[in-house]
Image (cartoon, rainbow, N blue to C red; front, top):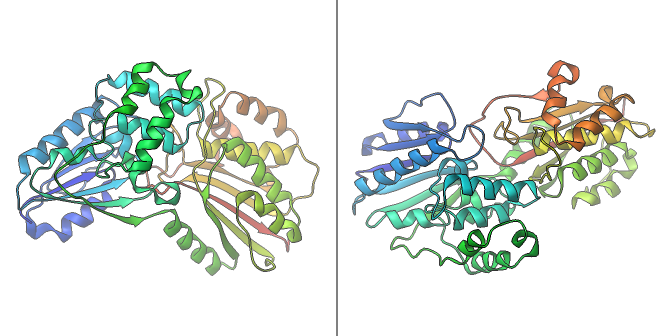
Length: 400
């Protein structure tokens, strides 16, 4: 392997690969949101500071593509390290301006589009997504190591699939979206018509391998909580739906008696096969959606936790000693510097109801958690260097 190319959304994996392949003279281009510069023989570009494509993302993508073309040979192996967040970092609008693409994605996201719909549009409006990056490799081999941030590990949607060729079902979905009344009423015809563009037909065959996912994270979390004395269960790794409604569902779960938990878990598509212990840990993973109702600031995890708190505070049902946490594994929930938020039974107070409802009505969960309890319930670990969707944790102690 004479030439190696690293496409990066986070730099920690790049450091590991660089060390392993040092003898092969790797030539790296790193695309990252991080300000730290990894110890790589690399050119580092920063972009997508607010979890959205920006002019820096476009410039960095242009440089990455030039590097591919410059190093392409029959002896080259192009190694792509791809994770969630890559859609914002690896950006080359096709036939439209960056501003038009941002407006389209914003319109979709604020009107409840799930990740499949979002990525269908991202792929068709891009010169590099949906397998189109492969058009730039004429002679070398392509290997992509994927960190999945999607329900059911749909690899064609991870970072909008820069190295994944479109399949029949994906093309059928794109065609269906062009006639959807919901989107035809919100988007201009020329944007919808881009969905009809033919898929790429590159000359190279990529090798795409998933190396991490939400299931991996939940298994590790279960192992840790079990070691801490909890009766831990992974309920689902495919949680979807509206974040506000899911917050209410979690509140109902927390208010359920110990012998009623199995019934409450049916709302989440999960179950437990035996009687639960006194210290219970219920683990969930997935990705919900938000319908923005105002000009506030927030994200799905912060909104979910706030909705859960508001629902609990408005009820007179007795509560166990509990903790509920919702957070994004990448450390960034929506266009904010927070990963999410958590609450315990101590936070459930009647005077929270009116205040929390006002913030929910304007989709301003970030501001609520910033001010509530002096920000102590706000989870702000900073960028974690990975992204395998969101995690929700319910801890309950029925012995206290």
